[in-house]
Amino acid sequence: MARLHLVCGLPGSGKSTLARELETAGEGIRLSPDEWMVALGFDLYDEKARTHVEHLQWSFGQRLLAGGISVILENGFWSREERDAYRSVAATHGAATRLHYLFVPIEELKRRIAARNLDLPPKTTINPNDLDAWSAMFEPPTEEELNR
Image (cartoon, rainbow, N blue to C red; front, top):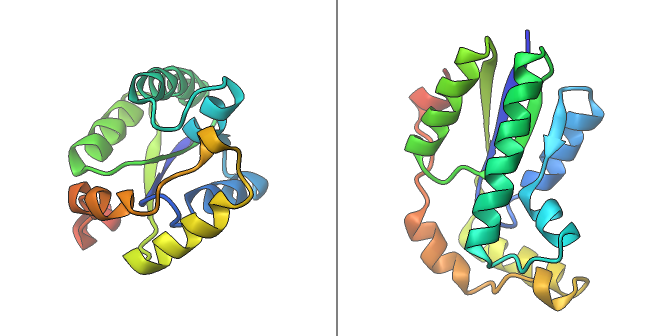
């Protein structure tokens, strides 16, 4: 049975690292919005481009799920509503869903982002101070949601 892996967390929490590990372990095909945006030359803060990339990846992901191939999405999944919507669509393709939540304290996220920025080109960096506002918008999964 195909499985949809939703990798949930704020920037710097280790989503890409976990998603790569899952892919290497044969758990599915990994789709990373950030990697596609960089490859296409978009600024990571370009919300219109991000929306298009995520929709394209989800359309492709659904085709994979329908074909019995597991998918790993590392979009962050900041709201329960979004996570539930992906779960619901995956179920229509006969796929199970597993939510992977990566919690990291905000100061550690800022440290990780600042360190990562040192090795990245300008259009691919994240302002660590944006994490304060983002964490206020982020809806962490409940225990019930994690155990579904």
